[in-house]
Image (cartoon, rainbow, N blue to C red):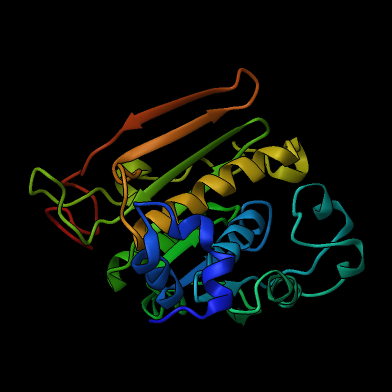
Length: 259
């Protein structure tokens, strides 16, 4: 896919990177990425992927912009309050980079539509804030054979990992699924919501940017990604730790007895 003169200038700092260059930037232009949730994590993810020149961005979010969102969801402005997030996000991203095609889905993602949406994209990014959606999206990506970048944030902590269980690892075994990492959700009510516990706004920008970086890495491979590794961020002490996790043969997706 050829780049226009305007695009060559816009992405010049990518193109001079040996790991990306012109061919890598063309791959970004040809890529289709679905972002689940245009909230605290989805906002920086969408901004950086649009700025990076990802050719088509799908945005799925059924919610509307509220005043309390603006502390961390920097994709939106005060004038967007009351508007649908998917629509407002697409408008803002269009101003940032007119070369990017925006596809909006102002709906909930569910087990019924998740696989269809995942299959229509090259990479899926989950920035949702509930366990049900995370399991639905990760299961759908496995069945559609699509890599998933997933992240989460708490009050002052965050986590990012990449799932590609449709691919084999270096040892020949399948890569782990989300259910290998989290076989079951925590008991209902044991994890307070963002509205109950709060969240540091700048932390969502940090974690979302890391998620965008991992998505770009899946499109233009470089370095070592987070497949089979969970990156943990502690904003209180500014510590970053990476934990390795592996395939569980008992998991219900690609284990010994898939369900």
